[in-house]
Image (cartoon, rainbow, N blue to C red; front, side):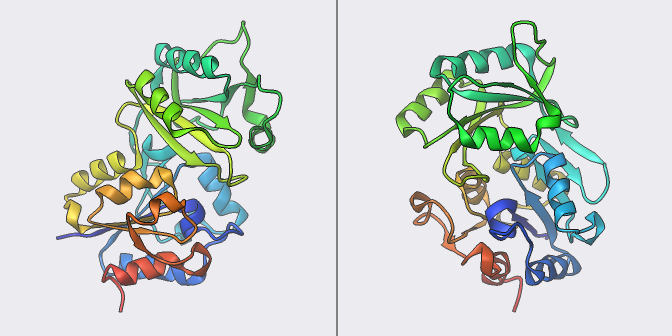
Length: 281
C-alpha cells in the first residue's frame, strides 16, 4: 500500500531564516524515490508559497514534491505545474456573516479573493495599533484595497483573516467558533511576528486534515499510512488525523504533550520525523 508524508512549511520545513536545509530536501527526494507521496500543507496562499521559493532561488521542479495543499486546505494542486485538483470558497453572504462577527469584536481583518487570485484582498483597519497587520499590509500592498461603504465584496472569497495582536482568550475564540459554526475557524500563530494570533475563517470543512484526508482517499492511501509533521495550532488537526504525527520543538507548549517530538526546524526536524516514522535508516 502507498504511503504519504505530509509536512508543514513555515516553522517546520523552513528554518527561522526562511530556508530549507539541504538534508531535508534530500529526505523528500529520497521519499519520492522510494514511492512515498510527498505533500506540503501550508497556510500560505499559492502566490506566497511560490514567492518563498523565489526568495530561496529554488526552482519549483527542484522541490521534491508531489502535491501542495495551500491556504490551510482551501486548495490542492499537483506539483510542479498549475493543475488544480480541488478548491473551496465562501460566497458573498458568508463573508458578510463573518465580517459582522469580526466587526463586533473590533478586529482588523482581510478578505481574500477566491483561488487562484487569493493574493488580492480587501482590508479593514480600525484598532489603531496592530504592527503585525501593518507588516502583512506592507508585504502585499500591491494587492490590497480598503474596505469602505462603496467597496464591492467579492462574489467568492478564499478566507477572511483577522490579525489579533497579543493573542486572544481561548473562551472568546470558542465563542467565535460557535457564532461562526457554519464555517471552519482556525487559529494560527503569526508567521511574521510569532506572537500575534491569526483567526482564519474558511468554508466549512476546510482544514489541513480535511484536505489531506481528501487527497489520501483520492490517491488510495490509508490513514495509517500517512505521516505528518508540523509546529503550530493549525497543524494540530492534521497531526491528530495522521497515522503518525510529529511536532517540532518550536511549537506552543500546549501541543507538546500530544505528539511525538521531532527536534528543531533549524536542525532538520523533518528528516528526523521521516527517520522516526521508519522511512529512513
